[in-house]
Image (cartoon, rainbow, N blue to C red; front, side, top):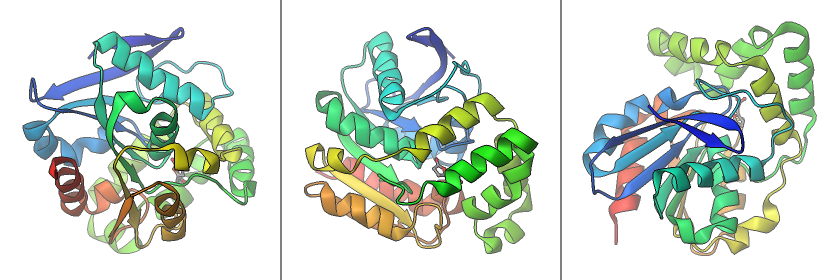
Length: 260
Ligand SMILES: O=C(O)CC1=CCC(=O)O1
């Protein structure tokens, strides 16, 4: 896997799939690595060349000092595309990945074909929950918030049915570098991309989770209604909908990206 330099921060990038196929870039959620896309990889790599990466502060990427911003995350993506010599990609980002996708769709439209913005938000009316989380993680590490975060990621029904997958997701979260996690929470505490949405001209699919309390359907609807021509699909899942409903998520992605 190449390590790609984005303004002095080395980012862990993986490129797999169909050579010469259309390229799809996947972008992870807070506290997850590129491994979160494993349930989609078999199907997606049959159709697309798939780029995954660990956002700065996550996984095997460097933990550059914060604060981080959506612009910084967006410029990291452009640095990856430039390094790989790739002009244009489709985008699928979940949660923070969807927030970065909003920034890119508005600020680098020529680099993006279609956008999929899953389980995401453009704005938090109440940043208190992020400030409280920052406080709790500073005092007790990620373990202090892990159970509450996992309860938001996956429904209780799924957690009971799939204890092994749930345990893997929790290990991924607990392995996040604390400094990187905190710098991302800080970026979330000041998130407001409402003014960017009408500037997005790429065909856009918003995916929301019926049981997602972190970025509820109303947050998805705010995004859909402000991006010209955007459509929305609701999946029967909590926040990490691609893990909880892998087939429904993959079908939504492939269906949208292959439709003319
Ligand atoms: O981790 C969470 O609690 C949910 C979340 C919100 C933004 C994001 O990327 O993850």
